[in-house]
Length: 54
Image (cartoon, rainbow, N blue to C red; front, top):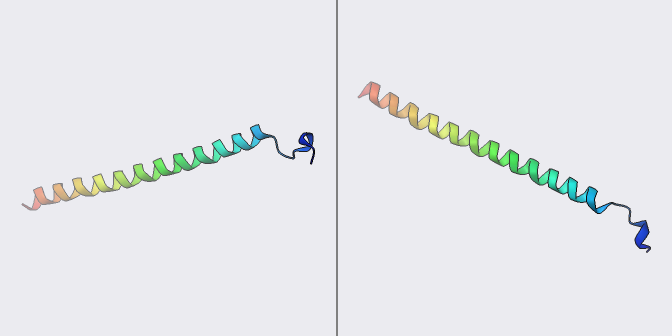
């Protein structure tokens, strides 16, 4: 195997890897943010309901 005939450019692989990791991290952050919003919303809603009823 000749070193000059490597089919992929290492920089291209790194860029793709960084893009995939970045997208994954962004997705995880978005999911965590949404879950946090839902939890906080539920907690606030429960407190408001409790205050109204009680």
